[in-house]
Image (cartoon, rainbow, N blue to C red; front, top):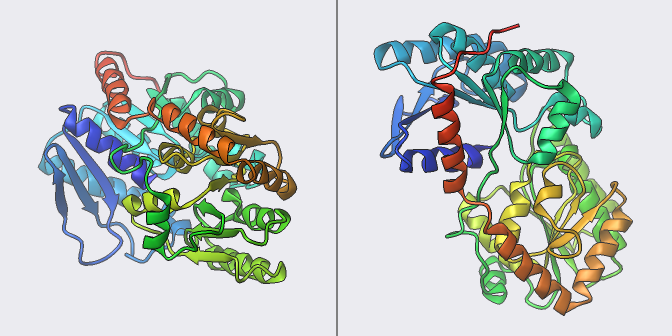
Length: 380
């Protein structure tokens, strides 16, 4: 989500829209404001202790809102409030009433969708999201599949639903030399490399990726997991992932890598033969798009936005359910057929070119312009 916000706001600024991103200060040495680029400023709001855990952020949303309002009082009133994620949506909903301006929400994940995939959220989050839905002037989704999910859970909202597909920075994420990438990362040049990129949490399915390696029947294949702990039990989930590797006797074939700077991920993608994305739910799937832009086939769960990103059997594989055997079978098909792997990679690159941040910003700019001349949705 951080990548999404940064890249989309950058594209909006380049399109001539003055943007201010408000984010909570999470350490003491942060400047109050940073001009990231012409037209894009980041403001750090003091709200709660700097080391506040994610699970406690809901308790300081009003502090955050007041900090935003103080900054606006000293500067200028915005034309639009656009919230990303439900916590920001809680703040954005109130700011709409404080400032009497249109309110746009991009949830990225919804409690009701996560519950479908086996990851229930607290009831108070679901209530908060329903309140946001009832007052938002527009709700942005990433693809038609996410729109269908939304309507299935909430029906037709008062505001409009707009599809704003994320983009990929093709200057960074593009096909490259696999051998060079492997040398740079210290990978074995001759062993097949599977790659998982994402948070170490059940939602993203790192356990499925590990078990798929065990089921693959290819002792010459390795798995690289790039990502860190997430959530209240993040350290526990990481420990369980390591324990699963040991249980399956894969400690020499699975490498855990700490989260990497975004632009460095392209080297990891290029070094891989196949990228695994076994998420329980996925509003879009930026990892799958970035891998595709680098020409790497993706084997992913057939959920959410992954359905729109991957053309089954042409750019990668979509797997129904979460059986590691099915993932292993799909990976083996690709590894055992170099011509198929090459053709999938070529088709994936071509498909990825549909997605650019500039196009996303252009759609969002039209939405903003339209909302500023419409009557605001009345909160229910």
